[in-house]
Image (tube, rainbow over all chains, first blue to last red; front, top):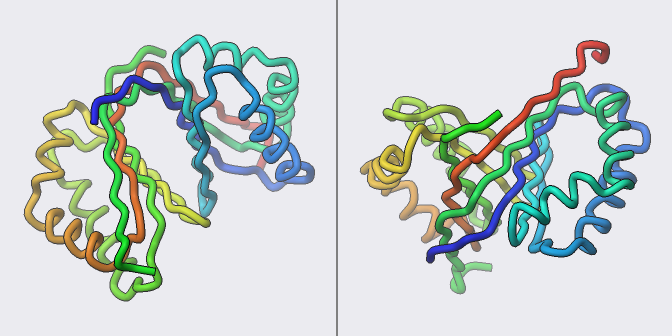
Length: 104
Length: 104
């Protein structure tokens, strides 16, 4: 399948100062869902955290980055929660899905 | 920073039949690292698993998908381990990093 949507890949390592982090992460996910051009979000955290948000186009990503509440969260993240992170903006060129209907 | 490398985003949900899965996942990671054009890999699993492998170009991704040992792992994955998965091939257009040297 050929596609033309975008993803922001956010890979992060938390510091030891995680007070308030889960609450803010949840709040930001709900806020992202309300933005124009938002398509979806997936995340998992083990040793590192990976969050992938999907967007219709690059302008939607720029708008989300500039959102004032999101900027405040980014500021807290830099000051306190993250010891490091990486942001990658990617164009999805193709994708395919698999579903196994025979397995529980 | 402007970039021109590729990522394969593999998002998966495991079935209840995970015997042998962790061992194969580890083996495939070691095998991927030996391929031409391999740049790195990040993964985390919580409710879902997200694995992102990074590659120099699309040909390296095609070669890795066609690798015989990898094909065998893919077959087991479809038959047994995964209840569903999604594969997305993405061009990384730009990226940036943050490191907080003040936090442990």
